[in-house]
Length: 121
Image 1 (cartoon, rainbow, N blue to C red):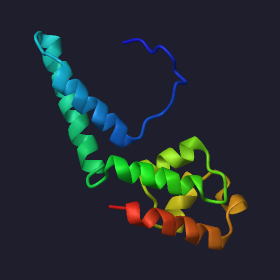
Image 2 (image 1 turned 180 degrees about the vertical axis):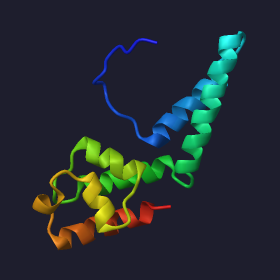
Image 3 (image 1 turned 90 degrees about the vertical axis):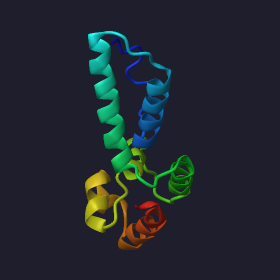
């Protein structure tokens, strides 16, 4: 496999799961290496199904829209991590956001956690 454009963008876990499911449906498996590929597809999709359980495309869109309107600018990677593993506590949030204590006040932390809370499984 060859990477055509390494900086094209990052996908959230839900998007990767959707792509894997489309690939499973459209791929015909014939050879021995094809069986290994099918196993990889199956295992990866099972893992992603478990960690994205209950998450829908609309949930991802709504959360990203809510984060877009948050007064503190978040990077693309920070938003991606929030979508993939929604933090439930200030400690979890501090592990995701760069310079967390310098960028956010306690009130902003609470506001951000309240924005994220409906999307936590």
